[in-house]
Each structure stands twice: as structure tokens, then as C-alpha cells.
Image 1 (cartoon, one colour):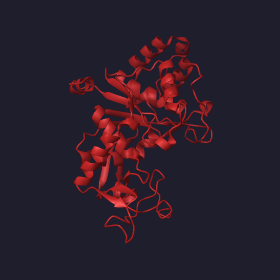
Image 2 (cartoon, helix red, strand yellow):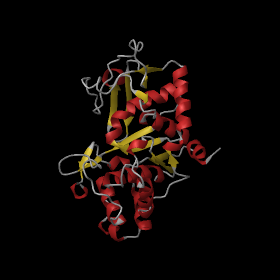
Image 3 (cartoon, one colour):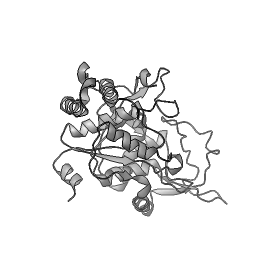
Image 4 (cartoon, one colour):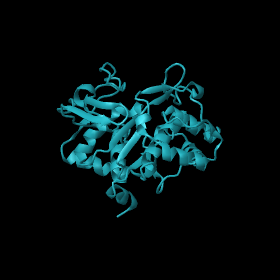
Length: 309
């Protein structure tokens, strides 16, 4: 029995932080890392680190190494080796073949252009209209493979955002598992990774809240347990936009760790004392672990953090 199985067997949480290497960490990334780390550590659990580079065309050379250096400089400590999605294709293939053997996936010939007029789902993606669900049109070949989604509401109780419900069939439709470029989709990769790592608590940004019902459907289809979820508010700039590479959020790699960490704790409602920014990193983390409370996290999807915009 490995260590994450021991933690799960003892009822201790297993959390994770899973950044994508599309650029350096910004304040919003640190907020997610702090929240996920403390939710696990404050309860005596384990905290894992995964680099989500399954979407290889979006990965920026050197970004992953920069992320690891920044996390280490900020005093984050993770359990076990770093997991790289780009090295886990065989695991995704195995899960995909299980679903295909069960008749849960089908080939789709639709292009993005053909779906451009489809209705928008909650997360801004296009709702699949079911064009190829009952068979490919004559003369067309499958470009991607989709999960066959049955009607019905998926519901879960998020520790921060409260009760969430979605009829995935009505709002999203049959969603992609294997892309036209031959890469496995994020939704499948993250479900397989979390299950195989024994993750019990997924603490991440609220920008991923709308993906969760799809992931729960995949967990059920693959016979995986569903972890507990907590979607933290994402950090926004002065214009009310999520901090991201696209909105030119400033990197924190050269910032003073104590200041950024104290700001992240304050952002998450933990009310750190004024002198914490002048403490050592060890003292700051000790205070944070002893004081952490998910109940104090703002129950919002976005909270302004203009200083870091």
C-alpha cells in the first residue's frame, strides 16, 4: 500500500495543485496553490503536485521549470514526485478504451466552423447539437471522440460555492474526450489523474466550477469515487477580468514571497496579522496551517485583486 492510499485509508485528505505550464505563476495561481495546500495540510493530509501539460501545443518551453522554482521559493512542499500529464498517455488510453468498450463514446466528424452557430454552454464552450450521435454522415470520418451523455441533473455540494446543479446533456451535450489533433481532452485526463493519485479533495479556482459536472459524469462512467470539491474565488483585475496570461496578469516569480502569501491569505478571508509579512517563511506557513478555515473563504466566484492585475 502506497502513502496516498495510507492517507486515504486513515481518513486524511489528499489534495493537489495542478498548474498548466502556459506561463509563469501569477497571484491567482498562488491563491489556488495556497488554498489547496492548506486545506490538506491543516487536516494532516497530503498535497500533490501535477503539471497539466496534456495540451502540449499550449505549453510554453521552460514554464514548468519556472513554476517549480517559484513554488519552492515560496515555501511550498509537496508529497511524492511531480506528475506530468504528458507522460501519462497510456493511462488515458486505457480509460478511453474502457469507455469505448462500454459503448459510451462515439466518433464525431464536426469541425469548429460547423459548430460556430451552436448555443453557448455556461463556460463559454459550444453546446454539441448531437450531429454525429447516431452515426457519422455519409462520406465523413471521425475527427474526435465524444462521451455519450444521458439526460439528468448532476448535483454536488461545493464547500465554497454551495449547491451546484447542471443537466450536462442539456447545457453542454456530448463532450470531447479525444481531440481531433490526437490529444486527450482535459476533462478525461484530470479525472484519471485524480482517481489514480487517490485525490479526495479538489480545491481549485471557481473558473473550473462549470467543468465539475462533466468530471463527475466521467467518474461515474469509469467507476471512480467522486472527491469533495471546493472552488475558491478567482482573483480579478480592476476591469473585473480573471487574472490570467490573456489579461496580462503580472508574474510573481520575482516578488517577495511573504508579501504575496500574506495577500493570498487575506484574499481567502483568513485575516493574517499585520506582522506576518515580516516573519520567516517557516513562521508564515506555521501560522497559516494552524489558522486555516475554509468557512472564512468568500463565497464568490471572483474577488478583485487590482494590485496584482
